[in-house]
Each structure stands twice: as structure tokens, then as C-alpha cells.
Length: 623
Image 1 (tube, rainbow, N blue to C red):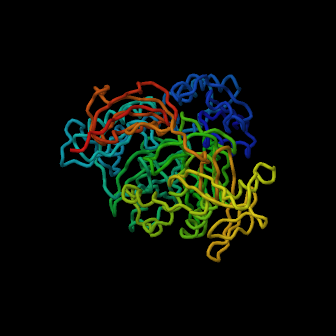
Image 2 (image 1 turned 90 degrees about the vertical axis):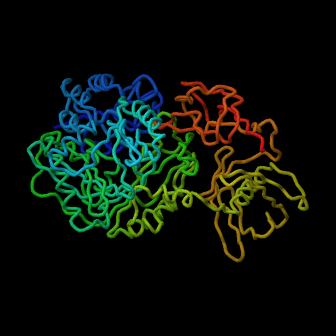
Image 3 (image 1 turned 90 degrees about the horizontal axis):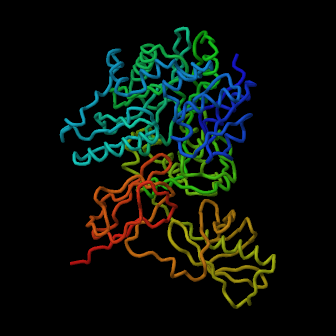
């Protein structure tokens, strides 16, 4: 029996594994980087061991340091979580060689599937249908579009769709750089890209005695940058016979490599066609939807298999439907730019919320931008979707920009509600899903709440005839609002102020009573779901940037600069000039206009803060 477990990971998945360990009276050990010294997983573990450094390559990708930490802390077993070293066969061997229990598949099984190119060869020999890799040097226009893919790792990193032959070389380089940063392996390959395919996967659990159970299907088609955003179980609206073929192929894949533990076999489904993509020899991010539908704990099953227990009888029968949405600190309208800062408040009521954050925690630049996984279960798909949508709408999220509004609109989109979505969903609909109308009364509510608070403490002096002015900024621009303080209370043109307190304003607008919850954190004000920044009454001229300025959209590291780019270089609108690395992803900074680069402040390896001036492009004068 395992009595203590070290989780070789961080954040949400470390907290998730710890939760099951506590329920089973298993002592928990965390590892943490310097950046994670005060992270939630560090705080909730029974014991925590420091890994000196901040970046993944210095810490969570250092297998020898993690094994040493396990031995130092007296852990008996190591759970790898997902990402980082979870699919690294050498790490699994190092754990076993140190006399520790490895809560995962045999190193040989990991090795067989660790390289996606080798995995495809094995699956082809086993009769599993798949898309054959292409020689990058032999790709022609007729092969397009193609997908560049990292041979190791997962999570959408190191993946690029290429639709123009001239872009292939650059995308190969970018994918390799991103894969090396995330997984320590820059090997990439090319395969055909299937338009309008669905990403469907099968959860399997195998014991060490030859039994393999298939725990249903999941649909993970809604993806951004090939990283899943919304997942559900079971996969809806599969063509007749497809589910049986998926089960057969998944169990065949597991048996071919003598698998043990929890794993996922991923497929691309297009109509009746099924293509093997890869096998993830670990626990998936989206495992909660399978747990909900089958009434199981997959982490507990992993522990049981690691202890040598048998899977007796038959797997439980599924019931109902579950949907999961990944809540990211990112701005979908700005090319999915990751966001950082203090998470003042995170509350999603009434459903399961798996997270690695608590109120007041800091979202940094070094790791994935996922804040939490929101999971809803109900007897039917429609009910589960409605429940998740409602919970996200009612959620209180104060801090960096998130994808919450995008999730709500995606869940309500006709293609999703009718189960006609595919992996190109956001390519088609992102612009519409991120076009929002401002709440015209949110700035007024913020001003009235602030006026009430200041009046309580004697912070204002005015006459009834003098209107007060407040300025705010939101994603929709700047807003200026006016109100008065009279003997009858606060008033504003066009509305009736029913009540105004520091945290709640009630207005009557065209005969309709509306409530506005107001929370303030420094210069940021949150009014219902609207985030506002308090602006000074008069703008500071010194804060203005020169036209054509390229500012860092997020904190990060300058990964590279376009070859030959120097001050005086001629550039064209849309040309990629600078690549920033943030949260293990690369982000292109492009020329805003055709013209001349008049300043270049960015250098490879440089750490930059959000808003930092990277370069300046002077636009060509019109002819």
C-alpha cells in the first residue's frame, strides 16, 4: 500500500492529485519552483521541496532534482500529473531505479508512444487506422494544408497549421522552438491536416494483469491553437458504428504496448472515417468529464493499479452527460495573448471547479495560462451545457482578462448546441464570438458606488448644481460619466438611482430595475462582468506613445527577432518582427504598417513587462 506520494507537477493537477490522496489518507509531497513558492499546490501539500529556479527547464523538467526531492522528503511514490515529465520514459526509469513506485505506465509503454512518429508506425502494424506522416522536404502544394506537430509532449504546443508552402520552413522552426521550450525536445514532423474533423478520444485504464477497460468517449473539438478549450463526455452524434471502432482501436493500442494505468487514445473523426492521432500515456486535463459520467475517480484507479490491484468484473456503465470548460487568463480578441497579475477573486458557483489558484494568488509568466476547469454534469447534454453556461455567467472573476465570455458564447453557439462543431470552430467564429457590446451603465454604476464611498468618509465637497465627472477605460475604449449629489441623494441624467452603496448600485432604466455589483481593487473596478480602469480626470500627455509603436502585449521573454532586422529595415504590414515567449507559447509581434523600422529596443533573451516598447515602425506616407 502506498502511504506517501510526491506529485512531480504544479498548479491544478497537483492539487487534484492531492485531493484524492487526502481522501485515501496518503501523505502528499509537492515540489515547487521559486516562482511557485507561495502557489496553492505548495501550500496544501503536507510537505514541499524547493526546486531552485523559475523556468520549467530549470525546475519541473529536471528529473534528477525531482527524484532527489522524493527521496529527501521520504515519499514512496511519484505521480507525474500531465505535461512536463509525465510522458518521459527516462524520468519513469529514474523513479523506479531509485526504488520508488511510479504511478504511471511502464517506461517501455511510454517510450513506445512518446514519439508520435514511432507511435504511428506501431499503430499501423497493429491495424489501427491513421494519417501517415509526410516528408517535410517533399511537401507540395497538393499536400496542403498540413499540420506541423511536435514529436513529443502535447497540450497543443509545437503545433502549426500550414496553408501556404512558403510558410512551411518558418513554421517548422517556430514549432521546434516552442516544443523544445515546453518538452525539452524540438523534434517535429508533418502530417495531412483534415479540415472539419472532430477530435474524439477514448479513456482507457489497464491493470498489470492484462485487463484493459475503455471508459467511454470524449469530444474535444473546440480548440484554440490546438489546445482544448471545451470537452465533453460522451462524444455526441457519432455516426453508427464509430464508437465501437474507437473502442476497438483504443484497446488494441493499449494491448500492443502492454499498457498499465490510465491513458487516452486520441482520434480524428470525419464522418465514418477514424484516424489515430496519438496516445497520451498519462492522465488527461479533461479527465473530470469521464469521472462524472462513470462515477469514478481516475486518480484513485491510477493508485490502485500502481499498487498491483486487479480490475475485476466489468467497468461501470455510463450515465448522463458532462461538459468541461477551461478557464484561461488570456485575451481571445488579442490573438489569445496570455494575461498575468493578481487574481483577486475566483468563484464559479454550483459546479465542480478544479483549480490551482485561490483569491489573492498571482498569475505569473512562466507556466500555462489555465486558471481552472469548470465541470457540469446533468442527465442530458442540453441540461449539462445549460448548467455550465449559467455557472460561468454567474462566476465572479476579478483580475486579469479571461476567456470567460468566449466560453459562454461558445456554449450557446448553434454549432455547439446541435453537436455540429469541429476543430476549425474558432477559425470560423472567433471574430463574432469576441465582438461584444459594452454595458453603457457599468461606468455610471462604478462612479455612483465610488461617490457613495467617498461621501461616507467626507472625501468630497461640492454643490448640488455642480455635476461630478469620472473617467474609466474598458476593452471598448474610454468612458466619461456625470452625476450629481443633491439633498435627495445621488442623481444622474436618464436613469433613476434607487440606491447606491460601495458594493451595490440599483438603477431604474426605462422602467426596468437593474442591479450592479461593484468591487474595487486599486485602480480596477469590476461592475458585474465589466472590468474598468479608473482614469485621471485629465490625460497625461507624457503617457502617449509614438505612432507605430510595438508594445509587448504581455510579460515574457524575447525569443527571437526576424532575421536581418535592424534599425532602418524596410518592413511590410503584417510581417512578423519579434517573437515573445510567455507561458510556454510563442507569440508573434507583427508590423502594424508598411514602412521603416526606426527603433528596435528588443533583444533575444530580454525579459519584458506588458506595455514595454519593443520597436517603432514609421509608416510610409501615402502616395
